[in-house]
Image 1 (tube, rainbow, N blue to C red):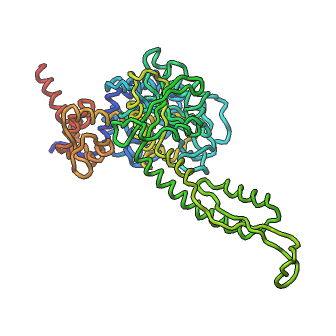
Image 2: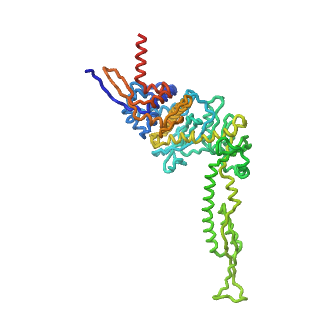
Image 3: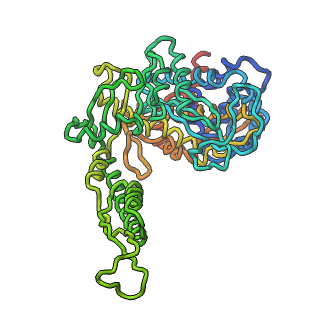
Length: 555
């Protein structure tokens, strides 16, 4: 009987991840920038291993990567002659060190640019934002290297002020959410100070070509930032409500003066502005949904203030004053603390005669005090003025040509923030992502790991874009979680569909054969959508047969 051995390895959705990495030439792009090393595991292969671990969604920290790959076809997913033991924490840590030494931003920018061009995306709009990532460990001493971020306490967007943190700046394409730029920042950095340097560094890579419009929230919008950005930077930003001109527009521009937007539930009006000495266009936007939310909040505030105001006036009515100026000062202080109410009171004299019993008819009081008596009433004018400001916000751009960038497009692009960079941060902060609790020995490695996290998001977003674009081109759909057809499935859902896919290894007389088990029609449809780079990891038997046929034909 022939000596044959059979083993199985888990493949699941990791072939999809490796296939997208192959499509964007992840290993080759990184190794080309790093240069030759004496390592068995190249830096590019180590990075692909970390990306596979991250997108495995199993919640394993980085140092447990060998455990993650113990029952995986490592030689198939990453490179021949490699074993799971090769991806220990020392190997991966040294790869992170090399990445830092070469230049994290430069490496990432090159990989991302190659990926975007490879899938045929030329983004017209990109979204910029930052988020904080909590870090375990002390990291007490600042590094002498000026490029190393300071891991320290700062404003935590995760609600963890008790932990030190590092901040990640992220730029993503509109709609496809592909991260084209990542930058690690100090834990106490502010968006107002960090946004412009990130934008300037991102724009420099275009070498004089037309740059995308940079879309950011109101942290970008300040006089100094607007003046610092050169004419080659095209931007769209929300204008802070604290800018005095915004408050004036809120009150002066009525909803009936605005144009109805093609995007349901919105209206807008365009005006010019020279804020900060920079010519720009402002778009005053009204959202019906936001108005209803803010109106309900206003009504709660008015009701709550009325209860507090009545209680305060009741306490005031129990006091006695010896001078009318004291009464007026107390009433003014009280009303000054109210936004939406005023006091309707009368001042009553309180006579003191100094003796017991009822005073005589002609008896004069020894002294006269004063007290207030009345009620709290709503200030209808103040409430109406506040109501007129609800549901409104202002967008600004330095693109002065309406034909190139209509107000309708400005609104649509800004609204994409939630489905672009904010979606990217939600992905990176997933509890199953290996960076949910960062702990590495050196700040340099944390910076490098943040870059790898960005690459993981890049691979995920590219895969999702490819599936959705191909579904649209072919007029096809895939079943969602409820079995209903959708043309915009998430990559997470596609990963779930591939659970339970195994590789059967058959070794006979020193020859290895592989067969992929449990492929169903829906899997083959997805593989057809993603193309040869992904099919390479699942259609092993078909590929082997094609090779054999080519060999026979060549004989």
